[in-house]
Length: 626
Image 1 (cartoon, one colour):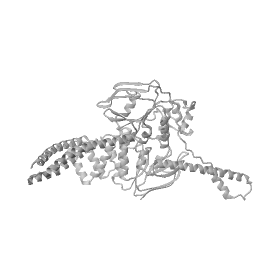
Image 2 (cartoon, rainbow, N blue to C red; image 1 turned 180 degrees about the vertical axis):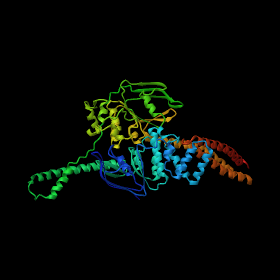
Image 3 (cartoon, rainbow, N blue to C red; image 1 turned 90 degrees about the horizontal axis):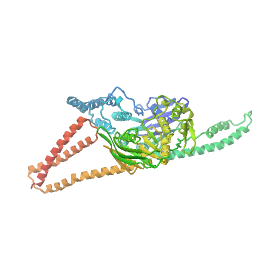
């Protein structure tokens, strides 16, 4: 089924064109990644397709049977309402029934709960409710009566993502899902679940992402916006890189050929008398076409990171017996580590286990409860935090940078003015006089990186550095960090970024436990899955072996008719009880159930356990009787 056709779309901001005369089609089942440098128009194009913006020229046609859903980087909510009210704002009877049921489940009103359950039964809403539970649980969204204006940025992003997934899964048979950086503020387990979910749902997808593993797992086609044009590549990210390099080589060869031809044609044009009209009109017209091609520039502008690093002495940082807790929640329990020069360490763990607290303690921005932190005299921290740019008033880019320093030292000696250094970071002279409030999210991140690096840090702390950075800038940052001589500590959910850069991991496992794992993220996940498989095998063996052995004996016994019947019933009942217990235990382990539901399940598990003990004892007695 044909979803979208766009013909000759053109969009500019002021005198700067984002894209010009682009044409494309989207069909049912397509999974497309849209990539480009920051500020080139990725988000604008998504808004045009969603009907939230208009193109300057061209037409965009969306099939009347297709619903377009847009997940944006900056979610919009009714701030006066709760999480529950914002997520289930559709007004459909099934959605209203689920909203009422979820609200009742957070109360102790048995009558109200019974009413909502009856309504759910009448509408046959339980299958969709199970999907809603899965989405909310996997995205760690609880306390649904909490007002959205009390949520952090990451929590708001996850609530917006949940709302989008619930909306498209509700009753839209034909949906074009457009997502702008959906993996920002998700931990790795959430990202891996989202990959699986999008593939299982078989949605039609147009995706903007900097996460290359996520891109490869979900998309089969890449569109690139570059130099006002759109280029289409089939296949994964690696194929895109190869094909793009080949395209640029071909374009450069074509320009060289046009330049040679231009020189010949220019000579011919100059020889012709101005007054003569016998000159070939078609050749004159062709000359101007050749001139345009010959003067074309392939600007593959790259962010250059040529920054001086302060000398790092032999002593870096020593942490001895560090303890830190928030109330009853332990963050660190006797953490010991001595950093060495040139180390590149990744920090991973679920949201809320204390990764950011650890970074603050390391920089002595936050005190530990006990222990010693010895920081070498030569250590200069560079902290690339999630907080982003900190500004007291809206300044122009050049004014903001000059508020730190007028000149910046370079690694190979000499220095650059603030304006020159900004150009090094792809801020053109026009862009330097733009107000900070007008910059895109990625441009603000690039400016934040600039202001950190010019201080010559030799111990870089990068807290989610990949959020909002475009893929070309990310590639250059990775190259810079791989050759960086100082220490690097990285907190990131970008698995590709981590795999390429880190030597080992600090794994925050919760309850103050930190594992020092000798490898990158992918190696850790392989090890983790192997450990889970071993644990499952150990659990299964004692459950099955004794019963099989006893069952074999039971078959040989001679029982009365009544005893045989009782024995047969027990053999049917025991597996059912065990299955119910396993299912309830799995529900509890998800950690996403309200307190009342947890209490009910806990009581039922206790009852099943007692019943199992009685029935298993009777089963053993019958199996031994002759």
